[in-house]
Image (cartoon, rainbow over all chains, first blue to last red; front, top):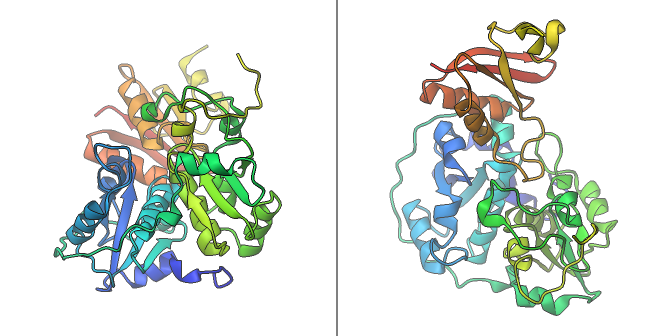
Length: 286
Length: 97
């Protein structure tokens, strides 16, 4: 991990097991579906962050507000000096999304467990069903760093520009326009399939190895560089709702050290439904 | 065709701990494309659709999936009548309690 641009944002499962009782560390499991993960067993001392309830505004389609972030951190007993160690279900997608939002609100020391929940369990490390008791705190957050996030108008403005790269991290079938969202993800559907014009397709999972840990830096550099996604361009990542793309945002920002990377969390579930925006697809129009 | 022939692996398939005809769900590659329900959601759904006397066989190479299936079974009164690892694949047999 030492060769990454910012290796300090990753912890190994072994490091985490040694710090389970470290009072300066707050371990957070970020789940899309806690009933399929956290509630069945989690890392001892880990508190639950429910992605739908805690990281998203319950009414508007938006990430949590600064006030909601402060309330979340206060409930978890964190201070701005706390080391927040994140992992979660679904291959760390939602943990990466939480990492991104925590950085938007300026939390300094956020780390991701390399390999996440899957590696922890695969290695037979301890788990518990007991939720920890937390002493609440009074957390004051910074103003949002809007440079980490792109909105639909931002993406429209850069179409066709060669100083930007758009990275679509969805599956090839989604990128080509063969499928949109499956029926099981009822809130992620789109009226049209395909991709944003000019985007390159680099599925998120190409950045990880079989054990879910990140690939070595040379392989990551080759993976993105070979598709023209280089550090001298501004990069915007997207997927369907912004969670897989926050995983790639993490890779480009912290492992490769690209200076200007933002996540378009509106992603295909916004673009594919929006009126009067262009779409490219590689399957015949029906 | 007799019931034993319909078991995953057919007559030559490795005998598990039940003689009932399992319904098979394979979680290999689940989550890869974010185009299917989460692995345990698929198990829950398949389990809910079991007919009388049927058994659900879950196959997965991922320890995290097997961990979830075991814990969910324990918490929901589902009998785990088989649990073994064969050639890198965990095979779990679930039966209505």
